[in-house]
Length: 602
Image 1: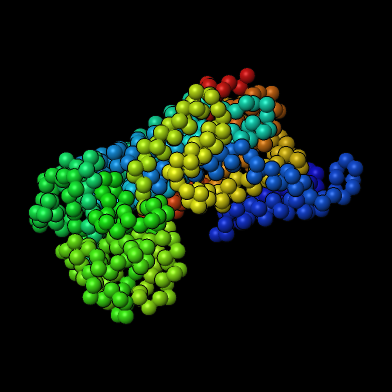
Image 2: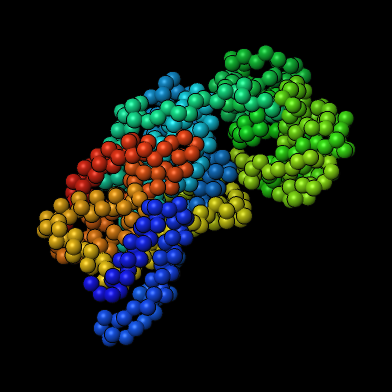
């Protein structure tokens, strides 16, 4: 082993150890290791001269310009537009409905999530679905811990079926293009192995969730929340809610929220039954906790019942939700919301009012304010800083950085998504170019603004991928990949099927402890050398690495979606191992025989 290979191996072992044994950010660890590879002194094995760095600066930073990395960044923007326009919420609401049992709920989550993740990158997809499914589970009286891991796993399996479904596939495809003469995989080419794996994985979850998943998250107890906001909403004429009963509209059992009455053509319906049919322009008065009031703003077909909102100079997309408490020196004491002229004085609109847990059964504009009342406002982004220290309010705090959902643009964002998928599927454009067009159209059509687009890009994820690409390059440059590939070849013998199973297994184990993308990019150079020594095609091994990394389910560390549901589902590390460990072995047994049938060794 040369000095360069030995140093690279030591640095890689140090990086792996830190990733497994510490809680430090993976991007910081990987870039620290990459930095060492750029500055460590090493002697050239041919000339004997000393040089600084195993990698050049260009080689180390080349990952930032990788096609897969850039594509992932663009897909984050596309997903954010679907979130901000309510496109994903609309699809989720249509699919979830009202299940009759936990088994039905599992089916309503698993299959639609797996299907959707084939066309929307699974990490931002789960980010959008997580609050929707969490609230839905509370509304249906179901434990979130029985639903969130299946949702994460379903997104992983569905994402493994297409090129754009998971960033792991995009990264491996980008590596394949840059390191070999391969033109890249097609949109659905990976589906030959992805679909059987997804089908087996989803069926496994449906058959075992009842025994292998914990039941730790009890349904929300509405009586636990003392503070009650009063909020007034209007049913938009022609919307999906008009003509439905209260129960069909999903407004009967909202978590933390109670429908007090309906005001219809100056007639008040105080005892609202589940069979009451909604009509356009109905004014619905709710009482509930602040988080539920915020969620209410996102329901398609409802809008705040205050004219102030629609007289503000800025569009709803450029406003934020703010909570403010009236002080005893406020000029609004003793005035109604309508008399207070919030819109004129503060460029803000009162959406809801809370008063010491007391339900205020009045229209928002007719509520007479008192010191200590909590107001939920739609305001300009600068409202928070301008009013934080003014005597008019005791407390001013932002509830959500996101703008109110712009349902009127949902069809635009969904159309752009369909266009992107069509361009790639019909092979008109590469995934990178199609994503670039889609992200640009989302901005041009104002499905999201530039600031939201910037925030949507998950920089730590991109930095992890770029650094892992650099570490993989170091393995090639130093000769370490060739050495490890030879060791793997010697230990596994000359049978390519055995070697394929070994490559898959190594990737699967590494992905569970150091993240899927990092594992894939470290194993790929080794797999290429092993294939070369066997004299067989490298494609089965590339697909094995891609599949093993893209279906990481045995630990929460390996895949971002698993980490995202860890807290909301009140899960422990052992839950993933118990539920996902056997599943990983089953997928391994399914994938290894299927891969050579589609990508032969010769």
